[in-house]
Structure formats: C-alpha cells, structure tokens
Image (cartoon, rainbow, N blue to C red):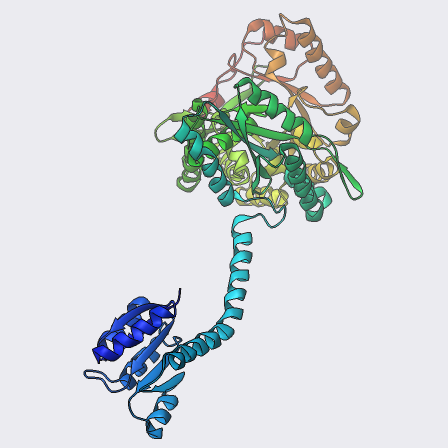
Length: 578
C-alpha cells in the first residue's frame, strides 16, 4: 500500500482529500501546517506529497524548498494545491520543480488521476534501478556467501545453515547426532608448485564435486577456504557411525583424480566434532572439528581424528608457543650449549657441537624437541639457524683468540635453512666477519634434507667444500639415502644416530648396522662420530670397530658457554683404555 502525505491547513479540505485517498486504497499521513509537513515527510518518507501553497508558518513553496535540500525527500513526487488559478502560481511551482499542480476545487477523479500519473512516472524511472539493485544484491549475496571457485557455500553461509539445522534439534531435545567433518588436503602447496595453480584449482573443484556427490542434497558441503572443506552430516543414530562415515569420506577423496593430462593422488586429514557431545552451536562445533583436523596434521596421522577436549588445551598451548617464539626471536631469549666431541684413540677434545636452548621466561630451559617443530611450521628456522651460526662461530673465534685450542665447531642446519638461496652467502659473510678459518666449521645435515633435491644438494655442498667447510651427515642410518647418491655428495663425516648406539650391546642388528656404517665410511675415506655414547661397553665396541670419535654423556653432557673453557683446558676428557 502506497503512503501519501497531505499538508493542508484547512481541516475541511484536508478531511475531504483523506476520504478520497482512503477510497483509493492509500495510506494517509496528515499535517496541518507547512512545518509539521516537513517533519512528517522526513519521518515517514511517503511515496507522494500533496501540499497546499497558501499556509501559515511555512507556505507550500517553503515546504518544497526544504524537502528539495534533503537527498532522502527530494525524490518524493510533489503535487501543489492552490485556490488560485493564476498562471504565475502554476509557473512558480513548476520552476521550483513540482511534479503537478491542482487548482481547488477539484474532483475525486482529478485528484486520483494526478496521483496515479505521478506514481506511475516515478515507477517508470525508479523500477529499472530497483531491479538492477536487486540483481546487484543477488550478485553480492553470491559473492558474500559462496566460494567463487567451487560455488559451494563459504564459511559464513555454512554457519547460517548449520545454525538452522541445529535450532529445531535443540528445541525438540532430539537425540539425533550431527557430525561436522573438517577436511584438509595434505601438501596442497606441492600441487600448485609442481603442476601450476590452474591444476590446483581443478583439484579443489574436483574435491568439492566428489564431496557433494557423496553427501547428497540433504547434507551441507562447504569450502572453508584454501585447501579446507567441511561436510555436515545429520541424522546419525549412534556415535560408532561417525568413524565409518569419516573413513568413507577419506577413502572416496583419496581415489585418483584425472585432471587434464595429470593423474593426481592426494592424502587428506579429517577432524570431526559431534552435536551435542562437543557443542550445540556452530561457534562451538566448527572450531572443534578444525582443532581435531589440525591435531591430526601435526601428529602426522593418516586417518581421522574425533575431537577430544584435551586437544583444545594442546591447541591453545601451541598457539601460545607460537607467540612466545616470535617474542623469543625479538628479545634474544635463545642461548647455545656445547657438547664435546672426543677422539676415541687419544681421549682428547676434537670439537664442539653447538646445541640450541631456549630460556623461556615461564617454562625455564627448553630443548629443541620442545619447540623446533613449531618453529619449522612457522618458517622461523632460517632466522633461528642464522643466529645459531653467527653466535657459535663468533664464540669459537673468541676461544681461539684466547689460545685455548684450535677446535672445530659443528652446527646443525635445518632442511629449510639448507634450501635457502642465501645460505652460502651468509656463511661466507659470517666467516669473513669473524676471521674464522673455514676448516674449523663443520655443518651437519640430515639424510632426508640432503636427498630432497640431490642435484641442488651437490651444488651447494660443493661450494661449501671449496671454501674449506666440513660437511657431516647427521643421524646416519635413519634416512633413505642410497649409496650411489652418498658417493656424489662431497661429505667429510658420518654421525651414527644414537638410536643404534644405545642398543649395540643388546641388539645384534643394531650392532651389525653400526659396524657396517663404520666399515663403509672407512672405505669411502670418511670419518665417523657416534652419538649418544653412555657406557664403557659401548665405548669398547666402537673403539674395537674403528670409530673415529664419540660424543655423549660418557664424555660430557651439553654445557653452557661459561663451562666450555674447563673442557678445553683439560688434557683429556675420556679414558679410552678399554
């Protein structure tokens, strides 16, 4: 129903107009003077205004001027009423911009005809814009609530639909279970890196299509963003069905994808949260399903994880650790400990391995196992590794300048740090700034980091060896390196992992592996250091089979910087007569 504002100071005329308008099925607002009419127009924003010209307080021309100065009221159709038929009055009204002019007295038909004409004209002008606005709103809704790549609901629409699904269940106190599954495509960045973003987009669409096909029209499938999807599965009767459904989703998603010229096999992580067990609102269920999924990622799980309240605390602990790590880098809360490496023939100190420690302000001294995985995920290993290198090399130079000894310093490089394009330049810069002999620096890398890209590894290590820097393969025997690749690498030393050393007396297989590593190294003219040596029996075994050096608690635990001088000044650190 259209609303019309009538501004007329004469009560009888105003009542007559109101009666005619009610007959024409209009809603009417009345005002007895010009100022009241202006206020009513601004308050109600009617569809049309009928206004007398000759009125006290504010005449019709004044009303029109005031409303024309307001953007909201300027577009309202305006019809003047006047008892005078003077052409100058009509001309004045039209000059101001009025839409029509009626002279009293007028018939009901004349009034309704003028109103209909003005409203029709307004509609002809505004309807195209209204329709365009509706289309724009629809398009914006599509953008706001749908994922543009897969056309699936996005997180916003998912929350709305999940809320609509849960509301009647809560009202009815239904025993029905609802599962919220959050799914992550593992190593999706590798797909983009290897095949290009277009193939990555094709994969995301295919995953969305596969989930939609499996879930059917009665379930909610959404893309949360990036490589994460969500499926909401209602009408589950028993909790045991959740695991069956989760595994079905995983099996379906991990079948091969034919994408153009490529066949892709993917692995996914899946986390689940249940209504009402784990929450009764989208704000509770979605984060908990994501927490379970992230938990599976961090644990390297191959299957699904159902939310457990303990995960939330562990997730919060991890987030706090991430914040603390960033602060630790900014405020230099790290320090280095050093573990001696001892010649197995003479018992004398050969070198030191620099080991990172974190002086956490509330948790005390933390070992790398407590934080390195998180630092790796955050991309912080390169800045931390560069700090370790600079600090350890500078400290070794200080000891050498004090004529304490000419030792080697061993420094661990992470896989990320080793692949950094600035590695050789940074090492060169540190050696030049400290004036340390490159032959006194030993870099330790794991088999895995060396084998990720053997061609790049050979090139980088050759540059370092040409400088005089030593290269050690750390934790040897635990990775997947082949002998053919090992021969290509310009390495100088192998380190036998302590997982073998700790059982060489009790376990024949570990003893055989350790013996074979030492023999192979000798045939390749490589030296061997055994890690984690703790007993005289282990020491005797290693010496008997020709191991070059050892490190472990039998010699010394890792010690802080201020205690290293005592180790250096001692003639021997170990009685090797066994």
